[in-house]
Amino acid sequence: MDIAALTNPSNLLTAFIALVVFATIITLAAPVMSDRGLEGRLKSVANRREELRRRSREAIASKSSSGSSLRHTDEGLYKNIVDRLQLSKLLEDPKVVDKLAQAGFRGPQPVSTFYFFRFVMPFIFAVVTAFYIYVINDFGLLGMQKMCACVGALAIGYYAPNVYISNIAQKRRESIVAAFPDSLDLLLICVESGMSIEAAIQKVGAEVGSSSMELAEELSLLTAELSYLPDRRLAYEGLARRTNHPGIRSVATAMIQAERYGTPLGAALRVMAKENRELRLSAAEKKAAALPAQLTVPMILFFLPVLFVVILGPAIIKIQDVMAK
Image (tube, rainbow, N blue to C red; front, side, top):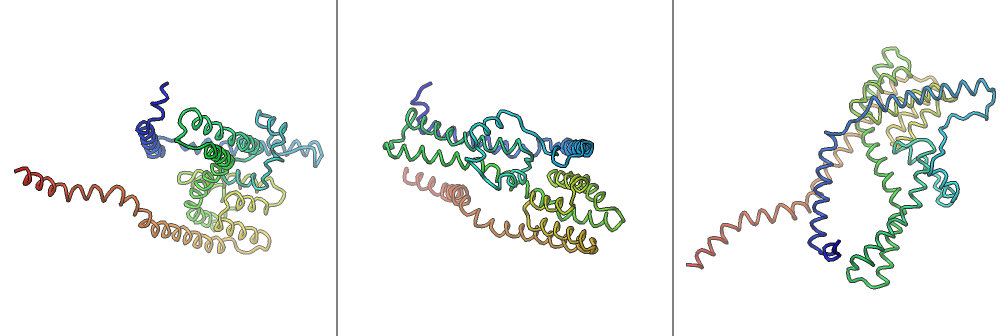
């Protein structure tokens, strides 16, 4: 491969534009072409529930409170590397389990995968940057500047897994929050019709899946935890911790108080549904208010040059014709 072709600025610009166009096409086509797989996700939750039931029966049969665990086991390659290098202690993050749960990754296997990539990604970023700077194109940088670039790539690689998990958690939270007020209305109708809270949550989870698969998964998991956890308060607190949203956290607190003190759940759900709907409306208004400022730069870069060409083009052509005569 010709090194000069790789370092040519026009080729780099062409590759960047092609990458941007490809990403734009994928972004626009993804919602149409992607299969949301709601039935598969709900089936996985149901399988998880059956597994909890089976393991709980084994725990009761063995009559040992500490011998049997309801958690998944992880015996993969990432787990072996993490244990041998003691990455869980070297890169210890007390909030990693909650962060992964908010992104939809539960169990010990995602934790091992996270620690593995948090250890590997800095070296990958640094090696790629060093190879490009020292071998392909140095961009006229001095030795110290090249070293600083490699160190910067090392730092970016260290924080890249956190950024990735945060982005997934943010998108998942937005999907849950968008459908949560409507699910509260459905839950209120089910509770006031005489259904139990477990049956109501299960019914709402099945109905809300068309608008938010993530919320349907969380409600199905909440139903399973209400059935098998020793304290129902832990199930509601788990929902609030996995979603990490103030509106859902307040609903979980209201349900805990209703369970503890016997307060009417219907009135609390009605108030919480109104508050969450107002939160969703205020978030939409905030985005709408920030839109003019965000459109300023695209308008300057893309609209004004075209407008100047359309307005001044005929006048320039006419002036050139007059001067030519």
